[in-house]
Image 1 (tube, rainbow, N blue to C red):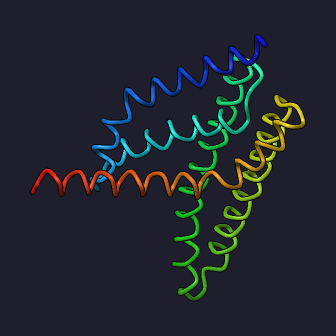
Image 2: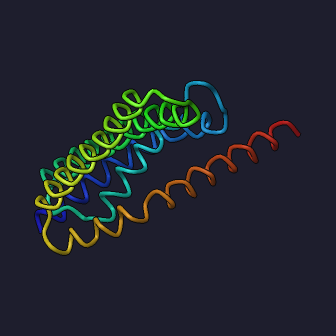
Length: 172
């Protein structure tokens, strides 16, 4: 009973935080600027909300640990993608050049080493996250982890369309 109350409090907290900040973010989601921070913040709030909703932590401490570990994984993925794009661009550039055997080997080894390190670190973080959860929560997390990106994209697109409709109504 106590854990359900704490989970409810967590959900209410995220809901209130989201509802207070959501209108500001929705207003800015439709705008494409060089700085997409508002959209990133909206996605972060929605991820947290959906994560808590999907996993149903048993208490507030578990919810905080879950969010923390999940954010570490997301940050790791983000850093890896940026680094991987940069390394791959260099590989593509070297693919068109003749010679430079030592440089090509070095770049390829760096690229493959970076990918291996990422996979090891990611798997370790996932294991630590799963260790925080009971079996049912682990299953719910794995389903969430596989499906939430598509759901998040759909939610953000829907919010953008609502913003566009709101803007067109104001213009008329």
